[in-house]
Length: 273
Length: 80
Image (cartoon, rainbow over all chains, first blue to last red; front, side):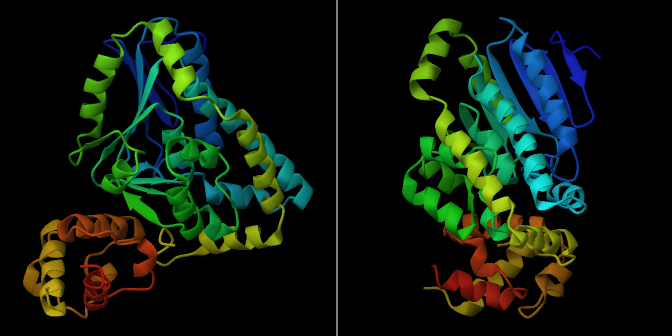
């Protein structure tokens, strides 16, 4: 498989992407719910390389999920815990920092893309999955979507740049509510808060996103880029501070204990706060 | 204002429809995780459906530890 050109259709272990009618559709299909670990990160990096060389072939990008449970449950905590087990605290922090830097490069590339980017989401859109959606220009949500930042339950903060990007989009009051309670909100609430631009019927987010992408893709690329830079500046400094703070918190033994509890939890409730 | 019994009954009806279980097999004190055979991801789906049905916002931390329909109804009742 080549990474230098955007082909009409590519499939990797965890993703597939397709260029059709001027829109690129990136589908996440990594069971159980598109957990973002090393495998998905590698595939996303491959996609970004292809996207960057796509030139003017497309006007819009839609990111969506093929997993029934939702858009993405966020970072792969099981992998994070397992990989961390045999490492010293310093090694763990070095490893997690390197991982975060790579994730940030991917999300910032999507954030700064010359295309109009749309996250078509449904179901569970948690943690890193929520952060992926926040990197896009528009979020179109199936009415059964739930958004959540559960990181504080583990003694962490969102590590993929979610806090500055959420603050860029919505009022600080709701940001604090989401962060400090770890609760999830539905699509209607997210729309009322200005986070979601359109709510679709159950199972229809991708169709609505396609119609939106077709419209957005008609516009002049230079004007679109100028509008995006003006409306949606990338908060680089805050993103950098977020990585530092995450690593500082991650070093504490309480985090490994929180991860252990999550990974070993066999009850039906691990996704409730 | 709905009574707790009415709210419970509506929840049982909604759960029966969406999880395809005969209504008569569901009772207020049933453990809905076991009865509906759902995990926490599907429980979030149930919460979302209840929010739409009752026109309320139901923070998921309020249903943490809640396993039976009647207690779930009381949490909803507090927000009607």
